[in-house]
Image (cartoon, rainbow over all chains, first blue to last red; front, side, top):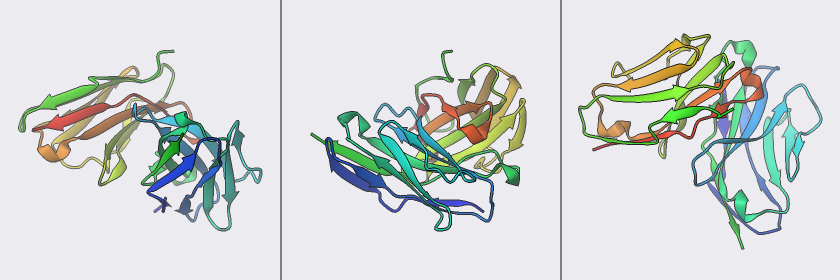
Length: 116
Length: 113
């Protein structure tokens, strides 16, 4: 079974600074996909960034980037130039389509507070 | 596109009553997922459909829960009878290719008193 672990329940960062959220996962599959979702107080789940396991290059979306360490099964999210609107729960998620299961498995989440 | 549409946004019901949650996926998306979010258990998959057919319902808590997808544009999640421990936010999501991620609805907050 695949598992996703987020070991930081809460984090805080000053506006304009950089913060890194951690995620580790466990799988025996070689073909899989990793995601970070953001859930602001509005509770809407928003896809932030996606990484394909067979791509060595780390994904980047504007101020959001990942550090994907396949051997260590680590997938951290870096938020640069933090903004007040980044305050949210962040969930790491995983799927391995070759298992036949197309659903995402989510971590427990990290609550990020951006301080003015 | 209006995105994934869920209704109602909030539902308060008394224990023992039947509750029906509704979802309209994005047109053309072949996959539909129902998740439940609680503080204690996080985001749990309840069931998902592909081309209107239930594929994995192993997360459905018990016989009190049932889900249907009568056509490509509509799905329901029913709880009968409801219990206080069913209180949670229920999300519906749809996808054309799950490996590219899902689009979530805004969720239904269910409170059973």
